[in-house]
Length: 376
Image (cartoon, rainbow, N blue to C red; front, side, top):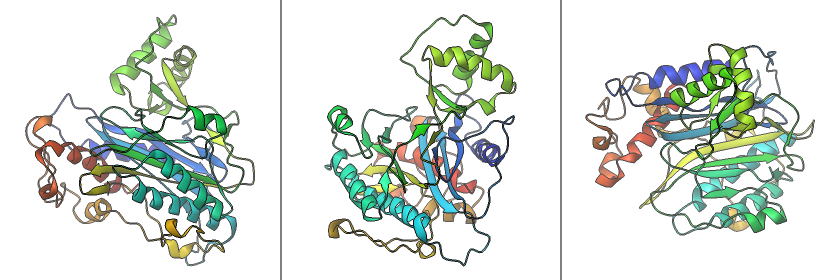
């Protein structure tokens, strides 16, 4: 499947760096997921599942993550499967894709030191509603930390009244990192579990339990050894049947958190854009972005709030450009970082802008490089 190929490419490319650091973990930070049309997120089928064949007109969302030594870079983008690429995309599919893209662009301007998460939430609601669309209710964008994909600071989409009361307000600060995840629907924005088998999980380090079944213990031991706290797919296990058996007891006792496959109503369309941003002293630095060609999407709507208006722009990432032209080493030709991880420096045109205390930017950016280099 395409999801298998995506994961294989990530592992192949990250396997080429830091070869001398035998204990350093690197690879998949979020398994490749391809969610189509009204499927909101986390669709990453197993080898034994029935294939879904993509067809012309499908609205496709590709979502994945990469890490180097626990420094995570996530990305997702949306596009339409179309054999005749010169044909403009119109109607509700164009509306929702443009709305989601503009929400992501607004977040890039608003997620900066001194601003609050509620400002982003409000902007997303206004932009989506301008296109007669709705952000998916209750979805979260998380702060990233080393080995942590779901940090404590979050940005919530389209919260209910109760969620507004419960969700903690937070101010963005210098040197924080966020995975900005925008999901917008042509429908009511209600994402529900439709019974599709969950295939992606992550370890919850705060939970402990003595597993009773031998299969569960063997499975959980492999999870801790191979993935630690990173999300993983059951597809990654050699014996899929045993993995499906072992995960049941682990999930039942909350040792593992599920990433359920969610759906909007049949006939609706959901678009997603996700990027990773570093909050640097001189402003936000977006290190991942999927491709986007705004000229292809023709909507009759536009953003109504003058303060939120931004021209849709074609997206290409610096790292993607470099990855196509310099396939063998990080930017600047420096190759692998030398010495221990604490001695790592970002070998790139950005290096002259970084203080010594900001070496971690290099590892986040290396994760971004391998996303782009794999062509995902």
